[in-house]
Image (cartoon, rainbow, N blue to C red; front, side, top):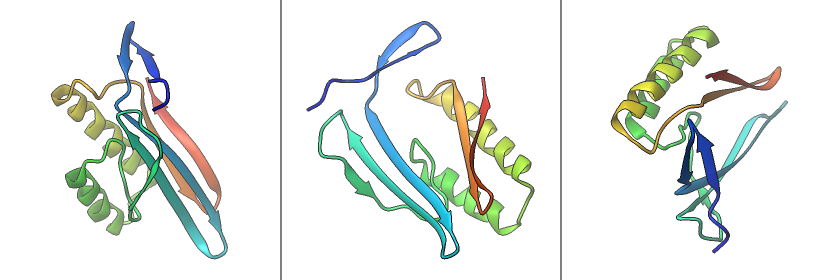
Length: 117
């Protein structure tokens, strides 16, 4: 077991229950995404099976909605707004979810983070 990381948000200290390491990139062969996860701060990290869309925390219903939205080929700003609104709703129901909310975009031009405080 490694030391439990602590997140300082909104003046509150919370032990993280899940640690994710995400490695993503693009090449001429396409997009590559690998996710390793540790639950309860235990080693080793285990590889997580993900599709073209995944969320942290994993919410399969939200991932399914994102897959349907992706099929409509909306502007990235619309997808980002959808994700941020979904995270806000999730935070209202789950005390383990809270700000800051972050959305990453990965495409042939690179990878960048969109952030809402």
